[in-house]
Image (tube, rainbow, N blue to C red; front, side, top):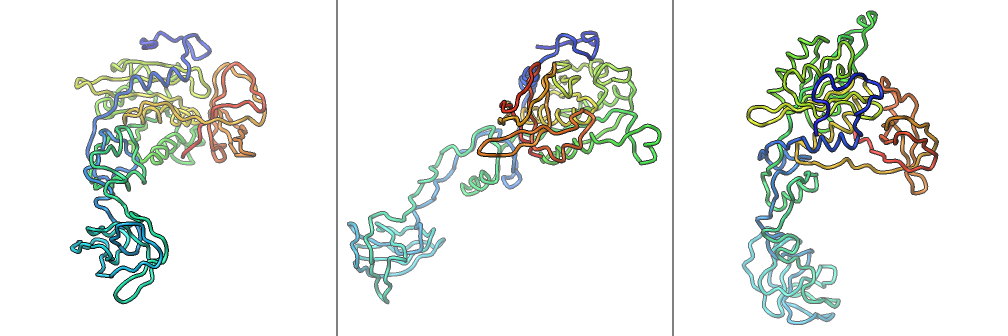
Amino acid sequence: MNQALTPEAHSGCGAEKGLISVDEALQMIMDQTQSLGAETILLNQALHRYLAAPIHSAINLPLFSQSAVDGYAICANQEILPNTAFELIGEIRAGQPVELELKEGQALRIFTGAKIPAGTTTVARQEIIQLHPQHIVVVKNLALHSDIRDIGEEVSQGQLLASTGQQLSVGAIASLSMAGVKHVTVFRYPKIAVVITGDEVAETVDDLSSGKIFDANAPLIQAWFQSHRHSVDIFHVEDTHLAVTALFNQLKDQYDAVISTGGVSVGDYDFVRPAALKLGFQQIFWKVKQKPGKPMLFALFQREDQTRCILIGLPGNPAAVYMGMQIYVSTILAALQGQKKHLRWGSGAMQHDLKPDARERFLRMNAVFENGRLQLSSLDKQQSHMLSNLMHANCIVRVPAGEPIHAGQVLPALFIQN
């Protein structure tokens, strides 16, 4: 299960043996990520949260038999023929207690949602009624039990409304609210730290003259989590073994997951992996046969109380960070909340050829529907240090390794949601 548990297991960052596939890496993440504990919160605060316990209805829906229309509740022992008259004895509105009981030949003015009075056999919508001071006349054929919503016809008491693992959408919250649900038990949101390594990050324009660059990774990751309704704590650390070790030592006991960028390959100033291993993180994998983002680390630290801190070390190039967030961090985030399932890849047809590559690639593309088919077009500037094409990309496409891709060939595509 574990790959390369010691720092000496990989000698370089080229095409060395032992690289695992993308699918293997994703499966290891799902296998090794434990769901977090549960908490009970108000339903109106639970949008997009994942249920940690099923919800059964405590009531029937409708709660009582009620009128489906504005009209007249009628008591008749058979189908009503046109021009049949009924004595009008009163009125009932929605939310009003019902005290009257209809007898044969009687009718009661009723409004949508109002409780059906005893003795009612059918409801006549007002459009088929001639109203007179003391009676009504039904002008069309009317079957028994028309326009009556029966008690429990939508949901019966005890019925399963929502299952463990279900994500609560706007519609789900509305449905649960109608069933009287006020609180739900959901998986806890993970507490996440983001570590940006590197001495080359510029704070001001003046810093650029000394060879530094602006940081895209921290804003990228922060915005990505904002789109997933999460907040994260961001830390910048200098490129020294001592500084990286000290920060990881602090974070491993406070956070459910740590995401780092940079410092994860085999350079002289790549301290993420050796620092993590020194502190007792167990390496699950390091390096994936993919482009961009090959030197990626996934490791676990198990605390004395058996809870875990996950470390996913992403390369420093921003395109690799972006792909890592969309594909791997999204899988981790879901698994921490009880969702151990693969990403939902669609498919589309390439509109042009692609040259082969030794590694599986994730390319930023633009997808459009034409003639009922999804068409994929690769964008320029795919290098791992470039992000400008994300202004136009709406999907990530998996391109298999080792074979040329021809126009018309169908490839997996993951639509970008943020």
